[in-house]
Length: 404
Ligand code: PYC
Image (cartoon, rainbow, N blue to C red; front, side):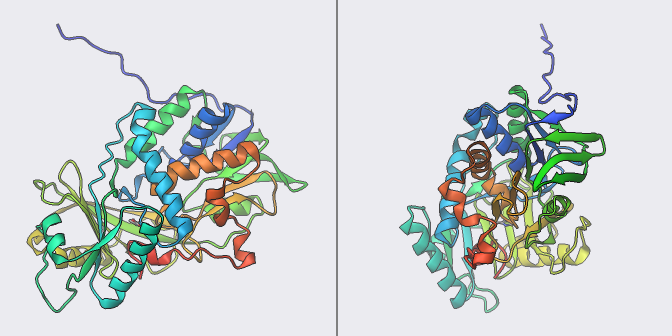
């Protein structure tokens, strides 16, 4: 006999209270991960996560779901490695399948200069125990038989940085799994709640003003992506961030033909095939600053042209959807995590540029420890907001998937 099960809601719609110990602005993967670790490791419950849209409407649902730790700087490598390790155990921990596929990640080198850059990354990665090495066309052909490796004069593939633990995860599942875990601990998730201002007195935030009323709070975390500087300004906190759109698209499904993530910083494109068979393709950030989430035809043409350089057999494949997220870029392509210098109970986990999704678990865990103990864990010390005035930048631009 057919049994009907009552569907469980993944998270409830609790009442928005008038007072919380902490208000987290931005209920994407960073805000959710911070709330999750504050609840599971530090016993916090009286937290409100507020977001102006539905859960996953921002960068958490607009990235290309790539996970990796083959960065360039020791600070970046250690941080993203810790994040990959947390992701490896997160399905089990959340009891929710995040469909994490560590299928391997290849960054292509098309010029002598780019291969030199990849070599430096391989050396830095290996020195810190990361599985990452340079491979040449024979091995690339074995790993990615569908790629055009002919010795053509335009953009030949000379070598690649191969990173076996890299891969893709189902980004919506990460949002939903974390949200369910927060909800089960009694942490309040409040979508469609727009922050419009903050009341700051004597160097500390007293309350957060929203379209659903004013919330009195002991602390605020800015965990937004795309609007970090706007939210910062409401508390009188400035940050060296500029915001750029980043576009991506997905094609109709194909039979499995690509089981590695392929990145070309020279061609400004990255491609992976999902479990459903679709190709997810991403572009470089748009060259102008904007908050626009409109996708554009010239960028679609660029993504198609560059993908065809690598996989000419895809000619004629149809694109199903194109979308845009907004990336908050810092001068050194490294995040800003810490307590604001101007406002003592205003915390920040922002400025992740094009790397935010992959860092969410470790950023959340470390930000939770900072909020709960008042002390920044070692792993995030280099990303303190004070580094700009001190001139201690963490130059991570050379490890961007698509910025040369
Ligand atoms: O750094 O892996 C990356 C990435 C992919 C898309 C944007 N950035």
